[in-house]
Length: 162
Image (cartoon, rainbow, N blue to C red; front, side, top):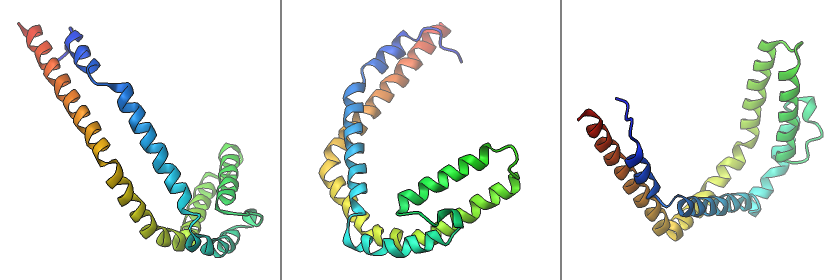
């Protein structure tokens, strides 16, 4: 059913304090990503990086000069883009190379992922404990906004049918 008079729906949607929600979500997201970035500074993680990089450099000669995981990923992304945009690239070989590199990288980085898990879980628990009231407020406001929007859409549809 097409609702031709959306004024009520738009009014209901306008009742959601979108900028406030967006600001809170943006701030919470930025804080969380900052927390995640800092987790790799943990001595347990830093102790694993040399072995990860030794492994990563052996994946393919193109990675021989990779200094750290971010540099390895930058090299990989650049090589992938170059191969993907080269009309002479064999597509099957390209896809197989991406699969091989991905699997090898996963094997290399696995000890770091394993070591990060308890650190990340603890950070997540602390963050949720701290931000829970704000998260509930966002959920409540969005839930109410969606209910108001649905109600307005139903009313507009009923008016259209009359």
